[in-house]
Each structure stands twice: as C-alpha cells, then as structure tokens.
Amino acid sequence: MTTAFDPLDLAGTQLANRIALAPMTRSRAGEGGIPTELAAEYYAQRASAGLVITEGVQPSAVGQGYPSTPGLHSDGQVAGWRRVTDAVHDKRGTIFAQLLHAGRIGHPVLLPDGLTPVGASPVAASGQVFTHEGPKDFVIPRELTGTEIRATIADFVTAARNAVDAGFDGVELHGANGYLIHQFLAPNSNLRTDAWGGSVEGRIRFAAETVRAVAAEIGAARTAIRISPGNPFNDIDEPAPEATYRALVQAVEPLGLAYLHIVEGKADDRALTGALSKEFNGTLVLNPASEGPTGPEALALIEEGVASVISYGALFLANPDLPERLRAGGPYNAADRATFYGGDHRGYTDYPALGA
Image (cartoon, rainbow, N blue to C red; front, side, top):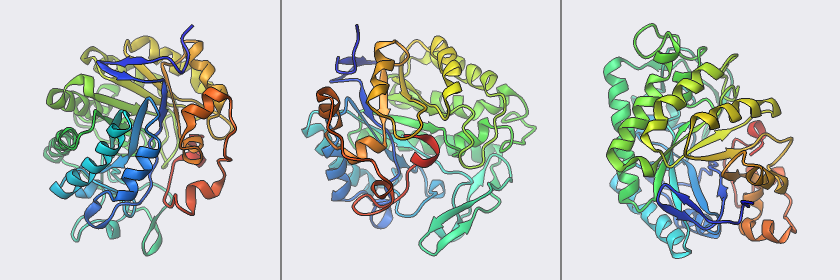
C-alpha cells in the first residue's frame, strides 16, 4: 500500500514524500517585489515537504493583485528568489514557483502609474481588495486584446524561464481561485465571442496555450497547473464545470506535465476530481475539501489512490515540521485565525474560502 511517506518520482524529480506545502499569499516582498531573507527562512523551515509550492508570484507588473507580493519579471526578483531556492535545496527540498496573474483581482493603486487591472472581459468582480490605502472595490478590468493575450502568455513564459534561472525545480501555473487563467475559463468572467471565449474550446484556450508555451520553454516535466473547478472564490460562477475542465485536462495531458493540482471547495467536488484524474495520467496533487484546515485524515486519500500528493496550507503554517508530525501522529499546533492574518505570518491566504 502506498503511503504519504513513500518517495515519489515527479516526472524525473525525486520527492522525499507525498506531502506538499500549498501556495499561500504571504505579502512579505520588499521594494520592487523582491523576496526578502524572511521568505528564504519561511520556505526553508518547510523544506521537509516532498514538494514546496510558493505563494503566487506575478509574471508581470500588471499581474499584481495584492500588496507586497513578489514577482519574477526583473533581475532583482530573480536574485531574491535564488536565495530562497538555495535555502530550500540546502535542506534537500524541492520547490516550484506558482505563477499567478491576478487579472481583475486587484486595484490600480497596487500597480505602477498608468496601469489598471486587465481581464478576459470588462466585468468587475464583486467585493474588495485590501491595499496600503485600505479596502477598495474591485474595478472594471480592461479587456485584453488578442495581441495583448499573446503578450501575456509570453510574460508567463519569461517568468517561467526566470524561475528556472532562479533555481526553481519547476513552476505551477495558477489556473484557480478566480485569477486571470480562471477568469478565462469561467463563463461569468469571460463574455468574449472571439477565439478566446464563447465556447468551451474558446474559454480553455488561454489556459491550454499558456501551459503549452511554458512547457515548450522549460520542459513539461517542470510545468504544472492548478485548477479549482466550480470554486466561487473571487466572484467566479461555474454552474456546470465538468465539460470545461475535462476539455482542459484532455488538452494538456499529452504534454507529460509534472502534475495537476486540484483544489476542492466542497465534498461533492470529489466526483469531478475522480473524473479528471482518469483523464490525467500524471501525478495528481490534491487540496481536498474539508470543513476546516486540511487535517491528518486527508493522508488516507493517498492510500485509497484518490491522489498522489496532498497539499497542506493552514496546518503547514502552524507546523513548519508538518511531515514529521504527521508521521508521528502529532501533536499539532492549532491553525487558528491569527496564523493567517497576524503576527509573523501577515498577509492573505485562500484558507477561509478553500479550506486549505
């Protein structure tokens, strides 16, 4: 029987176990979106995970959605991330950078002068984003033109190359939780009638072409994608997601990606997880649905063959040595609200909406 503590061959990269640190926004970057020594310490503390996935990293200046988040589009950012990857590799860990373009989730005050959030269509998300000036309503994003869509894909490709140059073992494209790739996938945020929308094939095109372009640049074995079918976070509405995500997985599966990362929002998402896992022959990383933070009981999903790797968010924040504690059966520090929003772990996470 396979357990969470068995090693795993991740498309040629050897993982020590099947426990992953889930990506969670930390809002700790310094001036210019450069990771600090605190980031190196934070990720090195959690390097006993079989796979460390970073917080969302913007591939371009306009891709930023929150204050003090890091990028991978400048030389200074690459140098900053090199300190992080070196620290993780010194602990014999494996680390992927999550590339996150926030799209319509953000605000002009977070961006360099003259820039405004962009999206698949000029449809504002309901709600607010926290900025250094306090909470602000989401704005109507500027619809990307066909030429700009191609340029945005190129930004992801450049960021992926920068990630490899910074020492990352691979990248995870964030196609979940209501950010730009997800905005193209969802029918309420993608109202386009051109080749980038209008049908299932049109709505998956941006995600599929971005995955293909990144894989062509750095290799499919170093490329992964995260999805959250039907997840309403950030004002997404996908009432019947199965056809869209089956088509997306079918489009990228032949590439031989490092892994597919699925975020479940509720218990009845498991049926779709199972259907998508049958379409994908590679490694399935799962952030499973749960009433609260993902707990030790989720490891049974590996033994049952539901997933190859389980990603932990909240519990990993509270317990930097989580794999050892899981193996020993505890004890666990409580993953309380202050862990996410205060103290040493300031910033934002998707935990309240996603049960990470």
